[in-house]
Image (cartoon, rainbow, N blue to C red; front, top):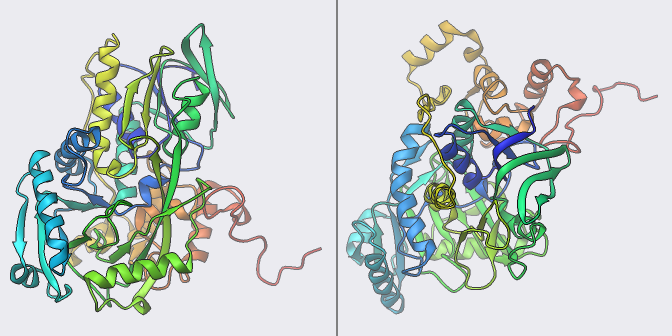
Length: 485
């Protein structure tokens, strides 16, 4: 690989991958480095999966501006990128009369943020729209522009579209520091050697503060990781069609009860300060807190119908906690995208466009690429097809007729698509995130052996080298009954 690029992006989350896609519109060379083995192994794929309407951020802040613009752009980008996207709208639910004033304040804030279609609805209308809602409901804020999205699918789609349009991705590559010529950044040092560039773009999420400090800028800025856990329910046991929020508090939007693009119900998150930026463990106390918060909205929730729990970490900045989107002043050649916590996912398309605007304002000449293709056609999802479509697909490729995951009806053909895609899946979890394999009631108990065999065959490695999520997470170490010398 050539080690000189026009732009190097540090981090392949939703912001970094959408910046890469934006830059791929132009005649330039772009490298994205990522310390993990795949895209999106970060807050970008462990979050509430909500495209927030934008009533919540304080008017006049970057968060408010980016949220509103990002929401509009996702309605454009999701169809272009073939991302699973469901326009649900959302409700902030007041339980009891004491919470109604907060609903009215959020409405006024939403009007100031120019959020389309928001309205306050009464108790009877809310009961009609969601029969499972707490009967103590006193009213709700309705935001029709809100939606739910497949968060990992969106990161992957942006990254794949960027790659098809010429961007290079380099995984398992740790950022170590910057290379300077005087006060100008001319490259970066990584665990895989030095790479040179005209501009570096810091979209390192949870580690964006450390990257900035390596450049000698934003010394007072610090990421304060905040962990939030979630519970996912068996779609066959419990379903709703809405996104339901509690009245927010100083700690955030509170526990929500939400449908997902895959048909499951999700509840969460709680909000816990974390000393470790990579601690994604769940706690009994946290899960009990989520259950209590969710039952405030939907009392009939029964956690015995849950199938999995997980946690994500928010990259919350200190100070006023607004987004920081800037050209570094103390050094040349660095764009900082810092403190991108909630509503960071919905804001990501707008943040990416703003990053490119900053480059242009700094004098960078960008020429449109005539061959840029904004359309990314997703691979087939067998379980979403009609019987006729399934039969036609199997006739073209018999691999789609071999079911590997029974719960989610994922086929060998889909697994092969994932392994040989523009951003290749090289681990079990990489395939899981792309195909939804292993996310049903059995949580992979049936498919693990078959997936290990397929990965080993396609990657031409021993089965003992197949991992769950990268080095150190090998799934097997010998064949059953094999004698260990």
